[in-house]
Picture (cartoon, rainbow, N blue to C red):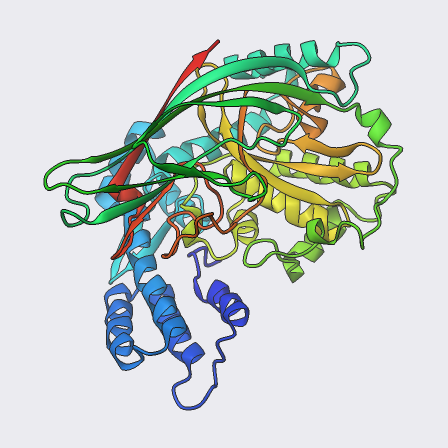
Length: 482
């Protein structure tokens, strides 16, 4: 089976979204784009970039085509960053992560898609995180072969189980925010020196907390640098704090904000949710719809759904079947940047692994296909000692409203079914909610394609000459628990 990430399928979807016909007279706009995408799929990166440069000069007046060609040229650079390891380098890393291995094992990992690679200009290049991912996948397989009593919970599992038990045991608080915690953070984004010419204005969007949410209240801005900034309205699906600053020769450019908020846990008894009926599709159309390029009801999704969900009697039963299947079949692994994957759920099903957002998008796609309204939610997990980017979602149940579900945290290793399945209908308070949607337009809008077109957690940066990708800047979050 060919596991190489294919760009062409995603491009054909985008052609339809953009309205670029593949046969609009002569060498049509869509045909040019498809030819470049085909070269990328075949590993002819330098040739693909050369094509975009030649055609860009010929079609300078066609802004849509120029933007598409620029995006494909940019994609080759992003893929080079993702697949940066030579075979010699990956073998060295594997020796450190998995230990001694045979040639037969190495080739079986490649052929089985466990060791991620692609051809770039005639050379086999490996994903930066391929070695650590392989270790996780091997550990997952070995763990599935162990008897249940032999499994030892990780410290973070123990922490989450303890906190889940505290929430579940609270009396008469069904669906109400509980056990709030107050946090204060300082978030810094630093653009490297000379990333843009001196005197040019750098535009920056920093993640900013949502306000209109039961679980997230009392947001207070404490500091911001530079002083001039704009906070996007809370109605925007991906909320940001916008700043501008001029670059100086030889100096990094710093953007910084400090804020505090109160975050609460939330839990809904699944036994009660089991009684809720199916929603009226007309009222929840937005949260049942496909959202190309990632939430799509492809033949593969439909076939998988039939085998997992079948004819579930209630929304809760459909959710439970999808949740349990993904938790048991799709282990967590480090991800490619989302911007280089044409269809994330299809990638997850091919590779049989994914990170928090990838598993969440697969859940959302299957849930929506089965008539269960679901929306994206993401930001940061703020657990002491485990602060990181994180994605989850919310499921709509008639009479209960939006119920949190954390697909990546999945089922906990507990004998108590309420604790085990806590994250199917509940969430802990250690969260920073930034987004309630995927791929939303910023306010103010970004001119150039985003570094991360799906999610928004680290920030986005650009200048008059284009987007500044992740390799041109760094970010840091420091946390205080009040």
